Image (cartoon, rainbow, N blue to C red; front, top):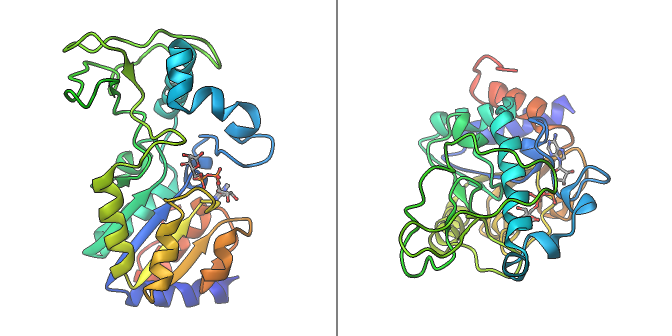
Length: 262
Ligand code: APR
């Protein structure tokens, strides 16, 4: 393990352009549930079709809004873990670096990441359902203590202050297009980087899962941090099997000879 890690650290330390691509697994040790882990995964406990699609929101806005407010309240109570902190350290140590995340939590930001690219939106960016008409000048939500409705409880969504339409979670639902600008900048960075670290993602949801594959196809070295094997194993030069909160601080310490922040 340490031989693999030191090899990966050497490659990372020498890289000029680095992308850190993250999934739900990097937030697992902050107590934020992943999606596909057995038993604890959100899709093992909840029905994505009833909660994470536009149709679901139209048919039961209170159920969907309540579920996302429950998730947001859990994120507010969570704290960034050493994996998020190490990711922010990579950004500050490598001038040409980018954090690309599939996560809708704000733990990268709270760990010090300047501008993580959110491919699937954010729990903290609610918007008017008629957003095409205008961005929702929707007060609160991003910073208020919004009452945690409790798991699976209904909560009526607020109304847009501009047009009175319903406000929706600012996340990308199944069947919806990813934010164009975010995807374009992620693809560009993946195609240009020397090293891409893929951390805590099963690599099965597209088009986000293309990002590490674009890096590999463009000649980058892809290093994976995940306790389990994933379909990404085959494109990775190194697979560091372990939890991100342990592996990433050790990797950063070894790559740039900085003290390990556990
Ligand atoms: N450290 C690193 N990886 C971990 C940890 C950990 N402590 N704990 C779990 N993992 C790994 C799991 O082994 C799994 O491979 O994190 C991965 C989580 O996979 P998913 O739950 O599928 O999450 P993700 O890949 O981010 O899902 C992608 O699917 O439902 C959609 O929009 C949702 O953004 C999400 C997308």
